Picture 1: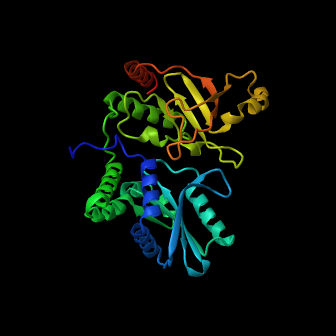
Picture 2: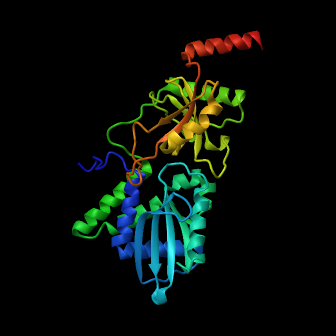
Picture 3: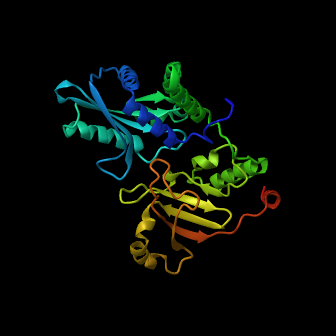
Length: 330
């Protein structure tokens, strides 16, 4: 029975709530993680009490701080730790920079004597995303937290059982062990994906493949190409945008995330710009997952500028046509 996983899979939100509960309920865990952070930063953090909040709205934008830990010392002095938790999701645009701006605001506004930014993630994530992780003041690995919990799981009775469960859950997140559905990668999908990216790079070098396009082991139901966000402008008044090629629907889209909530007002302003073109403006939602993983709030509706494109042909035909074109134009 011990080999059967308790959870189907461990999500980023699961880890969020695990950390929040430990920071809320375990003085030992708070002291351990604070001392570890202080040692890695090269400072000392003295405190007598602490409190923690989850999904705190940032001061200057609509994004949220995953975990905010306030450490209070005698005399009213406060140190704030702003903690970002990453399991496997990509960084958001200027995400680390916004954490640092928030930390600076707390100090300048007199809410804290000092404020530091921390990212908690698997060691493999830190290696793959070294530049992003380096923008935080320090990072704590899932592996270190799991080892701490494992060390304390020898406690007798219910406490030991709870800590053992949390240690195993973190290990499951690290290894991405999963019970139930497993994506079944198909060699033909891998081959098609590689040729698609190579052709797109050749025909339009400015297009950069997004993380999901570069991910190994794409399952057979993968029929969407989502390009990297940096291929589009980054103006302050624009939301996050992506170029998306929907292979099954035969559409190429520019997604404006969150603007669908204002679709009626924007459609009127953009109608004249799109008149006489093959482009259409439509709202869309996440059909499969309408709720945010972090706080279960409904995701805002996106707005899409879409255009029909020729549907992709079967791979054998694609290869034959490419070979024919190369033969005629060596």
